[in-house]
Image 1 (tube, rainbow, N blue to C red):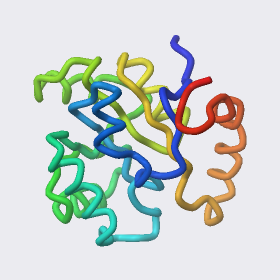
Image 2 (image 1 turned 180 degrees about the horizontal axis):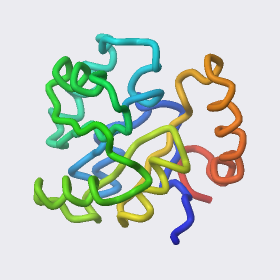
Image 3 (image 1 turned 90 degrees about the vertical axis):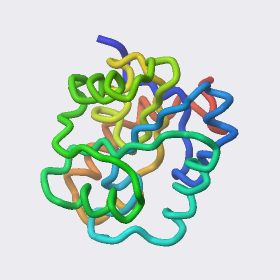
Length: 166
């Protein structure tokens, strides 16, 4: 099993620019929703998120929400942002992510997954052979179990500085 070591780590998605993705050779970006694009308790996309999505799309990057969420939240966000989505992705399982890449015609070397969790998003990316972009969770104070999980992820988060693997 590959180690869940992020390709790069950023403070938040807004540090992820089209130029960074181009440097990584990424043309297809699968995005986690909960605590990556928006906090769990927010139900609508804010204008800053919509602008970020538009900037990536304008640079020719195809975007897709890859969520483990079981509710209708991914569908609502996808509709607001004008992107496709799948919920119940079962990350770190790779079946769904690999199917989506295949259906869209992207190779692993031109694909990345961005998310806030090492043991789901980053591990899924590693198992798929795609680049992983780990961002800090937007909000962890509402759920003590998530706070504990993020604490357990610290050894995998601590190896990078300035958005680069060291």
